[in-house]
Amino acid sequence: MSNINGLLSLKLLGFSFLSMSVGLLFMGLGRKVTARIQRRLGPPFYQAFLDVFKAFSKSSITHNYVMDLGIIMSLGGLIATAFFIPFAGYAVLGSSSIVIILYLMSIGYLGMAMGVSASGNPNATIGISRALALMLGYEIPIVMIVMAMMLTYGSSDLLTFATAQQGGFANWHIFKYPLGFLAIEISFQAMLGEAPYDHMIAPAEIASGPMVELSGKYLGIGFLLHAVQLYVETGLIVNLFLGGASTWYVFLLKQFAVYFTSMCINAVMARYRIEQGIAHLWKYAGTLALLQLFITRLGVF
Amino acid sequence: MKKNVYMTNLRDERQNAWEGILNYFRKRSMWMLYYCTGCGAVELPPTMTTRFDMERFGMGPMATPRQADLLLITGYLSVKTLKRVIRSYEQMQDPKYLVGFGSCPINGGIYWDTYPVINHLEMFLPVDMSIAGCMPRPQAILDSFEKLRDEIQEGKAVGYKRYEKHYDWYKANQDKVLNREDAVLQPWEDPFADKPTLEALQAGEKMEEGEDK
Image (cartoon, rainbow over all chains, first blue to last red; front, side, top):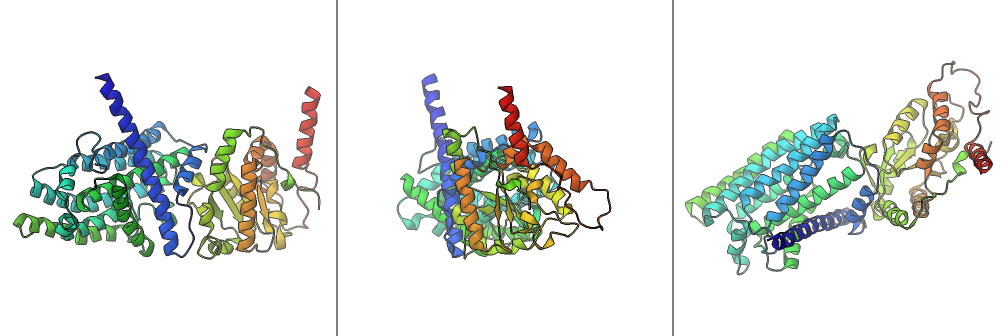
């Protein structure tokens, strides 16, 4: 029994590193994409790795132990979510319940909220309150889409949704549920905190929001957080709408395609105000998701 | 003009293989906080954006001193601003580097005899690199950053260690201008005319160390 547990913990460790390195690679590539859109050369594609190593080589300031705990809880929550995302049809824990995924994803934000609020900087508090308010905006469309899928398949397993799309492009949910895909693309932009929903970071406005007090190693963990978040959320969309994948490189390519779209939108959009952002999410993403739910329920598609 | 302290470079004694690896990452990823005190800030947008594209070298702007590695003093520094700059510099985390833009942080520039402006930044904070010019063009800025990268790799850019080691000297200089009580509108005289330079201080320390042995 201990033998199996040892193997499992090795697998979990491997998955943690996989999610972090995939996310960091995407972050570097995303910066490159933004640079090319702005007609610059841009940093090398491995820049995010350099940044994280450098951040961990610096000294850092902590304000109290709640800050340390909050940041670790945030990273832990997101990595735990990553275990439930099927990577190329393989769920490391044997389960990929979408309910657990949606539940664990918010732990990342809550841990971040706890940690950075403990730092006592008002900018951090403003930033995290914006992030939590925005969460209210995008979780509702996502839950409605997930409900539509659960009603169709009678299951809450993400892997079931992914395997149901096998057998060619026509089976992909992006074509079966186009309204739902649009809704989740809009929500995805808000989940990642990219423009037009980047009120959370807003460097020129609230001095990078939650990250304002993070220095050195804490900022390094902040980078890793964003990396794992990227992996989780792109993986979620690929499994839900882009047919999953049977091989790892196809899965990574699809994940990057999702992120690439997001970065292109990010590069050309301005920022909404926070109340505009939430209203926009509910009006457009919410309406699309609700329509999709009704259409699915009535059996039109 | 008397010999100034910004020429002083303290070799990093702890430089070993591991530090060398870390220095590689430090030089490839420099996040900067630019303190727009004067006209130098206007040279930074072209350096950062499409034409000269500083991000090629992994450099980018950061929002707060806590996150930054590189503090840019872009132009003249008034006494009031100096107080804020010192606070910003002390909030930054080691290793940190400080770059003075243009002639004003070097010798006061055209403001050399103006009462609210300080003349020698290196008297108050350890300057790792000074860019001469009024103002330096983006090419000069990129060139100086390249030199700074070389110095970081060689372990020569250790201004923050110099600041720790000679904090008393820097603190005394800072207090001299920040806590000034005499009237400012009077014939100008160099407040640091009779101060020992940092080099003299270091030379004295070396002699003392020799005596101990």
